[in-house]
Image 1: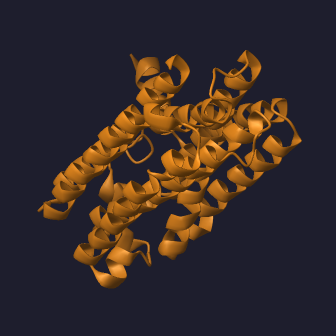
Image 2: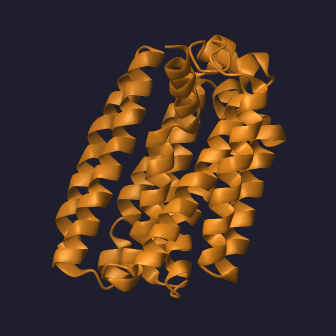
Length: 285
């Protein structure tokens, strides 16, 4: 029972949904660049690179976020005592090594991007999280680079469709980061955070995040106009945009932090489901 309790805590540190999403975005970038299923090595190495580098940053986040999590998320593995700080360090080293080795398999350019991706995550967790908008931009850039890494992995780094999705990922994650800060006001105040929500208030932060989500809808038409996806792209993107509009409206009307977090989660889930549908459509049609 104790071992299972420990394993569950370690799995929670990795945040499987977020690490899996990063991995999917790398492979999606490969597919969007090729307009086909990538070779097995590129697909597996791309998935592994995205998953484990993302996981290493998320694990390290719990290490540096302990005091805030005591208020905002006391059930997380570290504040609840299910894992120790030393175990977090060991798991960070392991996931980092696997992720960077996977990037190495994809070539020098991918390895350089992987190292930069890792450094950005470490710096953010260590010092830059409380810088407010600058920290939010760093995280959003790390999310956007997953699609670009996919293009690099298949030797098509400047693909218009890939960069369009990278920009959408940047805007989505920046909107999510700012709105999430609005839900974490009390804990962030303890760490002297300079988030938009603390400086300008919760309502203003939610308006800014909603504006960013609106830009996502605008940018979502770029691949149709500038890329080569054609009408196969239209239906999945309409579903993604409709999901964004619906849950952003709920986010703006949210009265409690729990309601706001639920809307943020469903914006994210809807986008990921839409990306999976889109990738399948590109492969099949």
